[in-house]
Length: 194
Figure 1 (cartoon, helix red, strand yellow):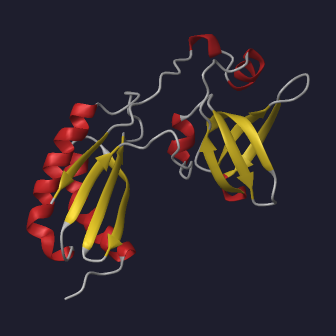
Figure 2 (tube, rainbow, N blue to C red; figure 1 turned 180 degrees about the vertical axis):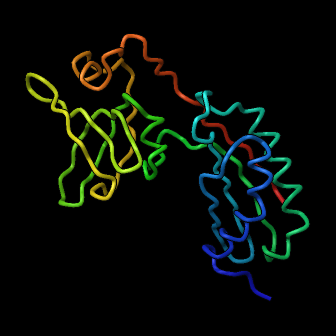
């Protein structure tokens, strides 16, 4: 019996791992399977659920989930033909912004955004809802507030910054910007070999 294609295998593994991840108080962001011959690499990316008050996932939580997920996969080894490596991780700063919650969690961060019409811009992320996001686009004198529909965004990623956002951009997006906590979450990873 040969293993299913990576996309099909990812969906099957997601079904197996979902109860374990939700039981840990997290949610699955992605299950990725890469295959090289008879060897597979399974990457389980987990994130905090919507409405979580924490800003990141603790490395100890990642390690515990890694052990639990590996134990859950053992009885389902028939899904993966051959040996595999399991990596459990939280999303990194370079994760593409593809869901409304990604935008909401990156409030006041700078993002590189490509639009369907070919326009590229760097803008600061503001309020986001289920349909779109407000952004502050830097200008010569003042930043410009724009509303972007997710349907018009082809690609977006958070940019790494080492300084606070400019006051004019932060004030445009959040009048209470002085009280905003910009602490970053933990990007931890833990691997289990099987």
